Length: 480
Ligand code: NAD
Image (cartoon, rainbow, N blue to C red; front, side, top):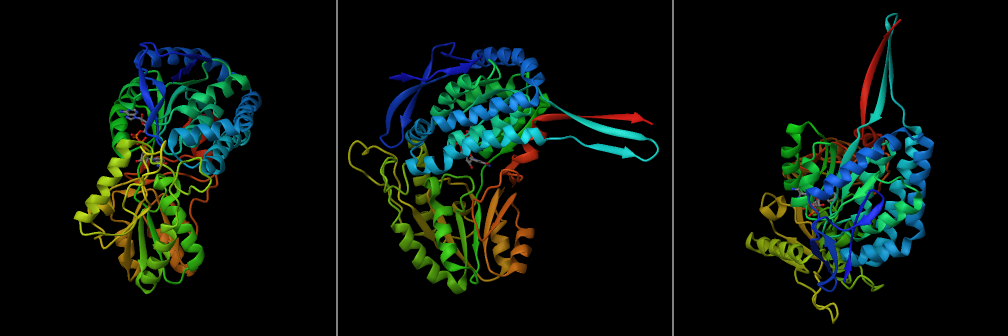
């Protein structure tokens, strides 16, 4: 069985203690590789390598740094198929999705920040007759990046690329549920001429190696994407050490559909915003609110489309949905469907596991599921499910839907469908979310601030926000 390795100080190496965790293929439910179960001793080796590399990397000219990062981007592109197949196998998502979304975006992340850093500048504030302030922005040093399993390489590189572009050295940990593409990245780094120790990739359990990264005194900043509970733990651990923190956490996003919307466009996008990546995108709109005038029309049309979504093994070209990422996650999502029934909900589409032929008969497949008839305050409508499950709720007025939309502890994103321009702006202004799409979903411009409010996180990623996070400003005043 293939044993993955950590990538530390420019080399693939085994974990110090020689311990491994099973890596499952979601489509078959079988173990297909072993992941290093690293611990704090591996983190220590990586931090020492990163500290040694920091003076080299941070003092390199921005042009040189940029050129290496562009090569990393090109290196992923050159191995596109290898990355696509690996991501799909490791995560359970359809190959087509990995080919059109995950890997292209990882390539863009590196390219965007490799070139963005060339334009990054600090401010000056002049005080008439007195003097001038200028602000420098220097890399922080050694930083930690911890990412989740839903968009493995996409979110891993979304953190690493700006951290490196800004001149930091990085200790990075992908999810132990989906480690494979981060493992492959080591090859690309070596080929791109990345100096040893600049980016160290360590695999293992969050509670062990993730915790060791958060607690290491030499790691000065943590950029984390994952669940709200984990984020809370990290904040509690890192705060007394005064670490800089960026936390991208869970969501329970509203998708608000007014009866004056472009129905066909809304319907097509709503199927995607509900079930893309098996509903395992933090930005999926899991609570669908529909204005009463079109509720029945929407319900019928939506259910008809949803029932046509083919659930199949990831390499099946017909697959619109693949496998959920893991058995525990499948069980969690199913338990929420059961909860919804207990709370009075009616399953109007899906609701069941899908059993495919061998070798996929043990895979974690679930139908796209639509539930109606629930109170907006019930647990199903308040807690993050993070799977192919959406609820439908009718509403009459803007005030009513705003109350329902804003009722959860989360505030990551929201989608609005309306042709009324004034209403669109009015609603966008009042929705408690870091990101609002009007008549669209998941349109991403990498320059824009990305992140959530309330329990969905602290701080923003993307564009200058990310480069500012990964640098320390220093203000210098000079008297005239
Ligand atoms: P998770 O919190 O279980 O794990 C995320 C990462 O943190 C993994 O690498 C894990 O190993 C690590 N980790 C776990 N415990 C840790 C600890 N004590 N210390 C340090 N690291 C630890 O989340 P998940 O199940 O992998 O991902 C799903 C969650 O991620 C969902 O809640 C989803 O909404 C969220 N998410 C948010 C965004 C966003 O941008 N806001 C994007 C994608 C996913």
